[in-house]
Length: 394
Ligand SMILES: [Zn+2]
Image 1 (cartoon, rainbow, N blue to C red):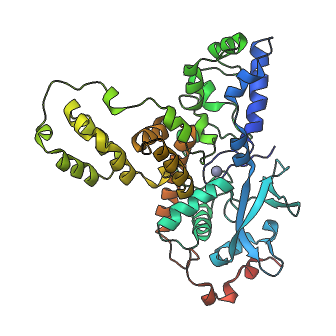
Image 2: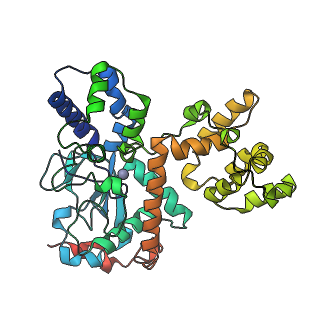
Image 3: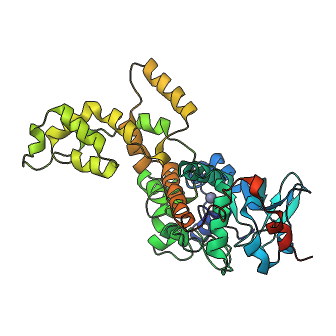
């Protein structure tokens, strides 16, 4: 297996196979019983996640005349500075390659292998690229993949790393999975339970008994195990939202102290809520008192819909279907519950939020570069002399 990590989310492209091997090996080391596959499945990635993990794109300078990416091994390292970012394109339909020593990816339609390189040929999950497009397009970049490529070159120009972008914080959960050779086995989970070679005792006992407690499954995916960092970030939690029992009136009552805010007419409170531009401020307002909470409950779905950050907003076609279905049942889409589900219950949305945060970091680095360096100037201005051909060694 190749040791390749997506430059956008930092996740290994073969983590689902590695996980299967780890789980089988660690369980057999700790127990002679065979676990029920249906129970073990609660610890494995779903089909949707596996598809996300292995569907890759390679990004790099493109050879228009031959309709392929230039061969990475023929780019002169000294000439990387002169590559025009406008020659950069995305090579779709790429899967993890066979080579361990030189991390490679394979272009499925042609069977061609490409070497990944830290500053000229980054690869990303196709699903992560979709997020990058949304996030950078919102920042006004017409060619997000070129801006991304230019940032990678700029940050990694003196680095031999091929596991991500220098200076980007991928999060501690991801760092724990990176190692010199391969993905560190179940890194966060084993570390949290201080187990070196086998699964935590409680997990083995529950697997043997054929029943995994909800609490342990939660710890594994969303808690200390942090497996959410590898979950597809495109699984919007509609069903989970409707099943989520969360409601504002269930929050514990606050202290008996009264707030002046309680004296305000509800219209004014709604206006204040709409002026707050992030959820944590709204949460603080809701915690002021039970009275304030009750005044705002009927308005919360509309307020949350208004304030929902970009990462949380579902694709408009999907949302339209869900909203129509909810209206047919005489209710609106429960935005407050949806936000709560995204924030606290859905592994997919937690990863999506994290990846949007990484895109924000990339957009921040892009601010140090000119439009020309970022490949955002019109293609008609392209100076052929500065083209990638000059970077070829021959
Ligand atoms: Zn990724």
